[in-house]
Every structure is written in C-alpha cells, then in structure tokens.
Length: 339
Image: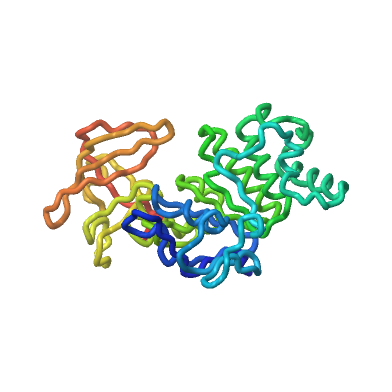
C-alpha cells in the first residue's frame, strides 16, 4: 500500500530559467525506505519541502497516507496537519530542553501521562538512548543527538518520516555506524521513510529503493543493485562512482552495438607477457596509479581495433603496485556484475 504519493508535481522559483521540480511522480510503499539523491540543484530538497508543506507546488498532487495534503483547487494543508515526521540536517533539538522533553515535544498534551511515558520508553529503547532522558543536547555526541532527533520524529508514530541529509554533519567513522543504526531503527519500527542525501553511499547502504533526480526530473528509480549495476544514463552511472565508457565491441562484447559500460572494479589487470593474447582483453600502458590504502586505482591507456586511443580505470588490490609505464593486459573479471 502506498503511504506517500506524488503525481505530476512541478515547482518553479522566481527568477530561475528551469523548474526546480518538473512533473515528478513517485510512490513509497508502507514500511519502505526510499532515498532520493542527485547532484546539488537536482531538486531533492525542494521535493522534501513540498512534502513537508514548507513549499507549495505549482501543479500536482501530494498524498500522505490516505489524505491528500496538496492538490489543484484545494488549500494545501499546513505542515502541522500533514502527520509527517521530520529529521533535520542540523537535528533542530531545543538546547534548553532535556532529551525527554525534546522527544515528547511533538505529542499531544492531551495524551495521558502514562501513555506519554510508555512512548518515551519505547522510542528511547528503539534508538539506543535509555537512561539519557535527563541529559541536554550539549551533553550528547553528534550521533546521540541524531538519534534523539529520530526518536522525536518516531514518537507520534507518523505515517512517513522525512530525513534531510541526516548524516552530513558526522565524521566518516561515525557516519558509517549511524547509517547502520538508522536503517536498523527504521526497519525495527516498521516506519516508512524518505531520506534525502547527496552522498550516494548513504543511499546505497540504507535504502530499499533509490530515486535519482537531475535538473528537477526523475532519472531512474530502482533497488540499490539496479541503480548501481544498471544505470539508466551516463549521469546516473557516474553519480554512483566511476564508470568506463569504452568503444563498441571492446572487451569481447562484439554483439553490443553501443559503447561498452563497465565499472573499474569489474576489470582486472594482468602484467605481460603472461596473458598477452588473452581473448576479449585490451593491452595498454599504465598512465597513473592512485593508492587508497585498501585498494589502488590504475589508469591504463589502450588502443582500440579502429585505431582510437582511450583511457580506462581499473580498481584493484593495493599490492602489487604497478609503476607508470608498465605494459599490462586488462580484461573483465570472470563474474562481472555489469553486462
């Protein structure tokens, strides 16, 4: 069942030459985590603000749960009437309130004290914060503050939670841990969530599906595996990491009419002369090598059958290192994920 639906949503801002969002349609199913990603200016934050009620679309319909919150000919519901939970990029915790009061802030004052106490205990246990009820935000780490913000959004049990760049303020090690925590918490709560992020690693790590925006238009929507291994276009392919775009027919793909797309990690390098005449391979010269600790990225200049010269990238183990100028053979790995 669809919990969040956008149909034909368009939004223009004054003094801009193109729409921030143009004819956007998508649905999120109950219990699903959908990430929306794209380059800066792609429209992902505008979409989030339209769903939350912080902006009004020019055209289109937005439905949350079974309620239409915005449609042509009707006054849009204000944010507080939409039943949407929100986790902001900067957490937006009240510094003068304790964890308890921050979490309970969105609950109705008319709810019984026992019910509020039960909700508090449940969401704090779910987010790994039991025993911290009396602490203030400045007494918490960045990761703990993020989990308080998530607990506050979960407390009213909204039909959908919106997360705006939830990991962007965290350092790399904490970011990875919190990604895992947030995904676990949302799934344990059975919550439907829409996560907006510019970091495709966040999207790949926590999502059931990913929607890719570019220049206000939906480019592709699919599972993380589909988006990464079967990108709809070059822009989507490169958004999620390096991609080699090679001349048609290379690497033994004679049946493919168009350019050959293959990611660097799906290639392997063999030094000559061991496999100099390997079928479906390319020979070339190492032009650059970058060491990243757990891996190295090697650039190889090759020549095609038609006499063209091109450079491709190969991601490989950190050892052995390959010196610039080395002659090598490049081929696809025996089990390549991209075909």
